[in-house]
Picture (cartoon, rainbow, N blue to C red):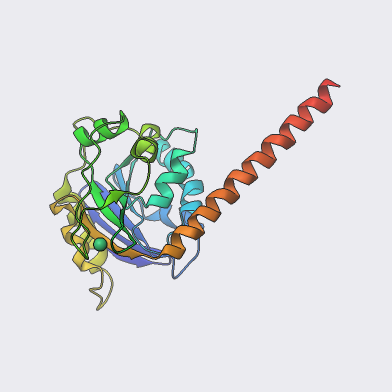
Length: 248
Ligand SMILES: [Zn+2]
Protein backbone atom coordinates (compact mmCIF):
# COMPACT_ATOMS: atom_id res chain seq x y z
CA UNK A 1 0.00 0.00 0.00
CA UNK A 2 1.32 3.41 -0.96
CA UNK A 3 2.00 6.30 1.36
CA UNK A 4 2.01 10.06 1.30
CA UNK A 5 5.10 11.56 2.86
CA UNK A 6 6.49 15.03 3.37
CA UNK A 7 7.69 15.72 -0.16
CA UNK A 8 5.65 13.35 -2.31
CA UNK A 9 3.82 10.06 -2.71
CA UNK A 10 5.33 6.59 -2.67
CA UNK A 11 4.00 3.31 -4.08
CA UNK A 12 5.23 -0.24 -4.52
CA UNK A 13 4.86 -3.11 -6.99
CA UNK A 14 6.93 -6.28 -6.63
CA UNK A 15 10.59 -5.06 -6.58
CA UNK A 16 9.80 -1.46 -7.60
CA UNK A 17 9.52 1.62 -5.39
CA UNK A 18 7.83 4.54 -7.09
CA UNK A 19 8.19 8.06 -5.72
CA UNK A 20 6.61 11.13 -7.24
CA UNK A 21 7.89 14.36 -5.79
CA UNK A 22 5.45 17.04 -4.75
CA UNK A 23 7.70 19.90 -3.74
CA UNK A 24 4.79 22.23 -3.04
CA UNK A 25 4.95 20.75 0.43
CA UNK A 26 8.74 20.97 0.70
CA UNK A 27 11.34 22.73 -1.39
CA UNK A 28 14.05 20.10 -0.82
CA UNK A 29 16.64 18.68 -0.59
CA UNK A 30 14.74 15.42 -0.99
CA UNK A 31 17.27 12.59 -0.96
CA UNK A 32 17.32 12.00 2.80
CA UNK A 33 13.53 12.06 2.90
CA UNK A 34 13.18 9.53 0.08
CA UNK A 35 15.83 7.02 1.13
CA UNK A 36 13.93 5.40 4.03
CA UNK A 37 11.01 4.56 1.71
CA UNK A 38 13.03 2.78 -0.95
CA UNK A 39 12.72 -1.02 -1.04
CA UNK A 40 13.43 -3.61 -3.77
CA UNK A 41 15.98 -3.29 -6.57
CA UNK A 42 14.36 -0.60 -8.68
CA UNK A 43 13.59 2.96 -7.74
CA UNK A 44 11.41 4.94 -10.14
CA UNK A 45 11.79 8.66 -9.50
CA UNK A 46 8.92 10.63 -11.00
CA UNK A 47 9.80 14.29 -11.59
CA UNK A 48 6.65 15.30 -13.44
CA UNK A 49 5.42 17.76 -10.80
CA UNK A 50 5.64 21.31 -12.12
CA UNK A 51 7.48 22.52 -9.02
CA UNK A 52 10.37 20.10 -9.37
CA UNK A 53 13.36 22.35 -10.00
CA UNK A 54 15.93 21.07 -12.49
CA UNK A 55 18.83 22.76 -10.73
CA UNK A 56 18.06 20.87 -7.51
CA UNK A 57 17.63 17.51 -9.25
CA UNK A 58 20.96 17.96 -10.99
CA UNK A 59 22.59 17.96 -7.54
CA UNK A 60 20.50 15.17 -6.04
CA UNK A 61 20.58 12.69 -8.91
CA UNK A 62 24.32 11.77 -8.68
CA UNK A 63 23.99 11.58 -4.91
CA UNK A 64 20.93 9.30 -4.95
CA UNK A 65 22.43 7.24 -7.73
CA UNK A 66 25.68 6.46 -5.92
CA UNK A 67 24.01 5.85 -2.55
CA UNK A 68 21.48 3.47 -4.09
CA UNK A 69 24.11 1.72 -6.18
CA UNK A 70 25.76 0.66 -2.93
CA UNK A 71 22.42 -0.86 -1.91
CA UNK A 72 22.10 -2.56 -5.30
CA UNK A 73 19.12 -0.41 -6.29
CA UNK A 74 18.82 0.83 -9.86
CA UNK A 75 17.46 4.36 -10.46
CA UNK A 76 14.93 5.11 -13.23
CA UNK A 77 13.86 8.70 -13.82
CA UNK A 78 10.50 9.68 -15.27
CA UNK A 79 9.42 13.07 -16.59
CA UNK A 80 12.85 14.48 -17.44
CA UNK A 81 11.90 18.06 -18.34
CA UNK A 82 13.59 20.02 -21.14
CA UNK A 83 15.32 22.13 -18.46
CA UNK A 84 16.71 19.06 -16.74
CA UNK A 85 17.74 17.40 -20.01
CA UNK A 86 19.63 20.55 -21.04
CA UNK A 87 21.35 20.89 -17.67
CA UNK A 88 22.27 17.18 -17.66
CA UNK A 89 23.70 17.43 -21.17
CA UNK A 90 26.22 19.97 -19.88
CA UNK A 91 27.43 17.64 -17.14
CA UNK A 92 30.58 15.61 -17.47
CA UNK A 93 29.96 13.11 -14.68
CA UNK A 94 28.37 9.90 -15.87
CA UNK A 95 25.41 8.33 -14.12
CA UNK A 96 25.98 4.60 -14.62
CA UNK A 97 23.24 3.62 -12.17
CA UNK A 98 20.58 5.82 -13.78
CA UNK A 99 18.31 5.11 -16.76
CA UNK A 100 15.44 7.15 -18.16
CA UNK A 101 11.89 5.94 -18.63
CA UNK A 102 10.65 9.00 -20.48
CA UNK A 103 11.63 12.49 -21.52
CA UNK A 104 9.57 15.62 -22.08
CA UNK A 105 10.60 16.57 -25.58
CA UNK A 106 10.29 20.31 -26.37
CA UNK A 107 8.36 21.37 -29.47
CA UNK A 108 7.45 24.78 -30.80
CA UNK A 109 4.38 25.73 -32.82
CA UNK A 110 5.12 28.78 -34.93
CA UNK A 111 1.45 29.38 -35.71
CA UNK A 112 0.39 29.60 -32.04
CA UNK A 113 3.83 30.83 -30.94
CA UNK A 114 3.67 28.30 -28.12
CA UNK A 115 5.97 25.70 -26.59
CA UNK A 116 4.76 22.18 -25.90
CA UNK A 117 6.61 19.57 -23.89
CA UNK A 118 5.43 16.16 -25.06
CA UNK A 119 6.23 12.88 -23.36
CA UNK A 120 8.55 10.63 -25.29
CA UNK A 121 8.59 7.12 -23.86
CA UNK A 122 11.86 5.27 -24.18
CA UNK A 123 12.54 1.62 -24.90
CA UNK A 124 15.93 -0.11 -25.35
CA UNK A 125 15.95 0.52 -29.13
CA UNK A 126 14.94 4.18 -28.85
CA UNK A 127 17.49 4.65 -26.08
CA UNK A 128 20.31 3.30 -28.22
CA UNK A 129 19.26 5.32 -31.26
CA UNK A 130 18.92 8.63 -29.43
CA UNK A 131 22.20 8.09 -27.53
CA UNK A 132 24.01 7.55 -30.79
CA UNK A 133 22.55 10.67 -32.39
CA UNK A 134 19.80 9.23 -34.56
CA UNK A 135 16.17 8.12 -34.40
CA UNK A 136 14.90 11.56 -33.49
CA UNK A 137 11.14 11.55 -33.09
CA UNK A 138 9.08 13.13 -35.81
CA UNK A 139 7.53 16.39 -34.69
CA UNK A 140 3.88 15.75 -33.79
CA UNK A 141 1.09 18.14 -34.81
CA UNK A 142 0.39 21.04 -32.46
CA UNK A 143 -2.18 19.94 -29.83
CA UNK A 144 -4.01 23.26 -30.30
CA UNK A 145 -4.00 24.11 -34.02
CA UNK A 146 -2.86 20.74 -35.47
CA UNK A 147 -0.19 22.26 -37.72
CA UNK A 148 3.19 20.57 -37.63
CA UNK A 149 5.56 21.76 -34.94
CA UNK A 150 9.34 21.76 -34.84
CA UNK A 151 11.73 20.39 -32.26
CA UNK A 152 12.68 23.34 -30.09
CA UNK A 153 16.36 22.48 -29.66
CA UNK A 154 19.25 20.81 -31.45
CA UNK A 155 18.22 17.14 -31.13
CA UNK A 156 21.76 15.80 -30.99
CA UNK A 157 22.64 18.19 -28.18
CA UNK A 158 19.34 17.76 -26.34
CA UNK A 159 19.40 13.96 -26.19
CA UNK A 160 23.13 13.77 -25.48
CA UNK A 161 22.39 13.50 -21.74
CA UNK A 162 21.30 9.91 -22.40
CA UNK A 163 24.98 9.12 -23.01
CA UNK A 164 25.71 9.92 -19.39
CA UNK A 165 23.10 7.42 -18.23
CA UNK A 166 23.02 3.67 -18.56
CA UNK A 167 21.36 2.45 -21.76
CA UNK A 168 19.35 -0.60 -20.71
CA UNK A 169 19.59 -3.56 -23.06
CA UNK A 170 16.77 -5.98 -22.64
CA UNK A 171 16.31 -5.37 -18.96
CA UNK A 172 13.94 -2.43 -19.29
CA UNK A 173 11.38 -2.13 -16.52
CA UNK A 174 8.08 -3.82 -17.23
CA UNK A 175 5.64 -0.96 -18.05
CA UNK A 176 2.71 -2.74 -16.40
CA UNK A 177 4.67 -3.07 -13.15
CA UNK A 178 5.65 0.60 -13.29
CA UNK A 179 1.99 1.46 -13.76
CA UNK A 180 1.02 -0.68 -10.80
CA UNK A 181 3.58 1.05 -8.58
CA UNK A 182 2.44 4.43 -9.93
CA UNK A 183 -1.21 3.65 -9.16
CA UNK A 184 -0.26 2.43 -5.71
CA UNK A 185 1.46 5.76 -5.05
CA UNK A 186 -1.40 7.87 -6.41
CA UNK A 187 -4.14 5.91 -4.69
CA UNK A 188 -2.44 6.51 -1.36
CA UNK A 189 -3.61 10.10 -1.37
CA UNK A 190 -6.92 10.25 0.43
CA UNK A 191 -9.78 11.48 -1.71
CA UNK A 192 -7.59 12.80 -4.49
CA UNK A 193 -7.71 11.75 -8.09
CA UNK A 194 -6.09 14.77 -9.71
CA UNK A 195 -3.14 12.81 -11.01
CA UNK A 196 -4.86 9.59 -11.98
CA UNK A 197 -5.13 10.61 -15.60
CA UNK A 198 -1.42 9.99 -15.87
CA UNK A 199 -1.90 6.24 -15.44
CA UNK A 200 -2.16 5.98 -19.21
CA UNK A 201 1.32 7.33 -19.63
CA UNK A 202 2.70 4.20 -21.19
CA UNK A 203 0.03 3.83 -23.84
CA UNK A 204 1.98 5.60 -26.53
CA UNK A 205 4.55 8.16 -27.44
CA UNK A 206 4.13 11.87 -27.82
CA UNK A 207 1.10 12.32 -25.65
CA UNK A 208 0.49 15.80 -24.50
CA UNK A 209 1.65 15.93 -20.97
CA UNK A 210 2.00 19.32 -19.51
CA UNK A 211 0.27 21.60 -22.01
CA UNK A 212 1.45 25.04 -22.84
CA UNK A 213 4.69 26.36 -21.53
CA UNK A 214 4.61 30.05 -21.02
CA UNK A 215 7.14 32.04 -23.04
CA UNK A 216 8.30 33.59 -19.76
CA UNK A 217 9.35 30.14 -18.54
CA UNK A 218 11.66 29.90 -21.50
CA UNK A 219 13.17 33.29 -20.72
CA UNK A 220 13.71 32.27 -17.10
CA UNK A 221 15.34 29.02 -18.24
CA UNK A 222 17.66 30.90 -20.57
CA UNK A 223 18.64 33.31 -17.82
CA UNK A 224 19.23 30.45 -15.35
CA UNK A 225 21.35 28.66 -17.93
CA UNK A 226 23.32 31.85 -18.61
CA UNK A 227 23.78 32.31 -14.87
CA UNK A 228 25.15 28.78 -14.50
CA UNK A 229 27.48 29.27 -17.48
CA UNK A 230 28.74 32.54 -15.96
CA UNK A 231 29.33 30.86 -12.61
CA UNK A 232 31.34 28.14 -14.35
CA UNK A 233 33.45 30.70 -16.23
CA UNK A 234 34.14 32.62 -13.00
CA UNK A 235 35.15 29.38 -11.21
CA UNK A 236 37.43 28.35 -14.10
CA UNK A 237 39.08 31.79 -14.14
CA UNK A 238 39.62 31.66 -10.38
CA UNK A 239 41.21 28.20 -10.72
CA UNK A 240 43.46 29.38 -13.54
CA UNK A 241 44.47 32.40 -11.45
CA UNK A 242 45.36 30.14 -8.52
CA UNK A 243 47.41 27.86 -10.78
CA UNK A 244 49.27 30.82 -12.30
CA UNK A 245 49.99 32.24 -8.86
CA UNK A 246 51.57 28.92 -7.84
CA UNK A 247 53.67 28.80 -11.02
CA UNK A 248 55.00 32.31 -10.45
ZN1 LIG B 1 -0.35 25.52 -32.87
